[in-house]
Length: 389
Image 1 (cartoon, rainbow, N blue to C red):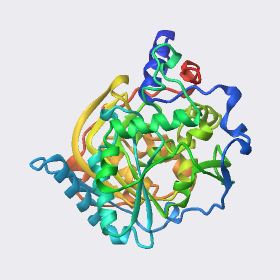
Image 2 (image 1 turned 180 degrees about the horizontal axis):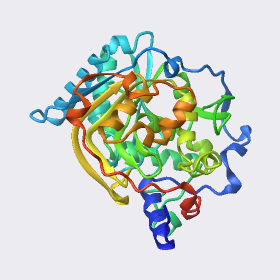
Image 3 (image 1 turned 45 degrees about the vertical axis):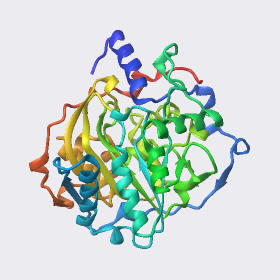
Image 4 (image 1 turned 90 degrees about the vertical axis):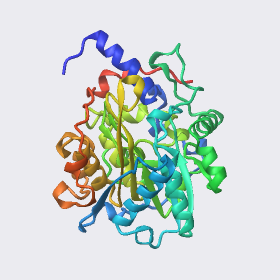
């Protein structure tokens, strides 16, 4: 696809604000960090067997009853979706510490996971006797959205700024209220102790850094909003952790340096970095908030993404399988999504949607042909990201 200079500038400005990515200078890349500058500890790595299992994964699709209140309809749909894949006791067997990871890219509610979905999950897990927390590393708050910088958003690795960004996002989106109401800790995945993992068969980052809460959790539950994305095609369970878990203390509050490094391997600057980070984590449950989805030039309304009411919850233990079913419901083939292609190259399973058992609603009955995003190679927009804060 050919772009004029004006189109590139337009895409760059809108994309930067929309995705709340950032503009770390090449002179300060995360893979050049000195360990003494951070509280970092080396940790052993073991491949998470669920990603490479030969067992046929199960994914459920459940409609949210519009006749009920939002909270009651979502609570029932989340519970039923998990019951259809074996039930919470089965899904969390042997797992005591569980971290819920929503997609809270910024403080804009239309672009993020509904608190009611995460609260329903958290309450279910607490009732089952699990130790549960909600963790996120958001990209932008009012602190680092600046109208006078290129790309309209700046990036920071400053500890106090990272605290401010995450505090505002949790508060503005209602997650602080969820935390207080249910006595559920909120974890800022940007700051704190950071585990360094060596993963020799990673594509981009042979050494990768994650927050200790992610590393110490027995299981991570990815809870994204169903959206399209101009770099990734779709942003679902894999991308929610695969980009959203890069900690700001090491990589900056936004991940432009991550994308830039990944372009050495593929043009999206996204797919390979997603798989690298996913492999560093233990994603054992995925609950996709498809109550209100986004189509077109997502993942933000300001970039041209349009909201689309789907009234669905999609759940599965296998992140790749869950995403493949969700993308199918959105009208995408698995071969259209670069993240899936790189997951297959990494040996992750399944590699065909026919290999997935789908419970609840049939995809054909709930499928909507989403307006597809205008895909932009990362190298066309990387120079338009703004300066560090």
